Length: 185
Image (cartoon, rainbow, N blue to C red; front, top):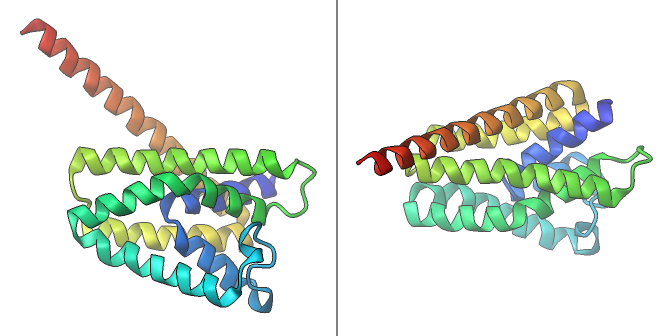
């Protein structure tokens, strides 16, 4: 059960950010770097560090501009299932569950969280800077918890899933009310 919670925690981190959780997983593995991460282990560690660091900085600095944030959200929406799958498979080392199943479920979980972020972006316009910094901190905590305290990380991931479901339900109710008002008018 702890491994499932660790997988959820890592996948949730992949649903919040792309490069930061992968960078943190690699750096926390010490000299092995990305030897445990599928797909990434085939590339030179120097290139991986450079690309992940550059994208992490782009996620931070482009978030201040509305068009930059739209670009970031589009890229995150496309690649969050892949990053979530990679992170989930990396954390799941001692399970008998097939890797493809872990990757699929982790990728879907990351995609759902990313879809909710897109929904909040289009609902609120530009997200405040403190929310973006909070996402980065939460992303780092989720990776640390996935590796060191899976119970706490999994509970945070389940809380994020609950918030995602509540948000989707709220948006659906608002849509139905607005559609009902248009018909009444």
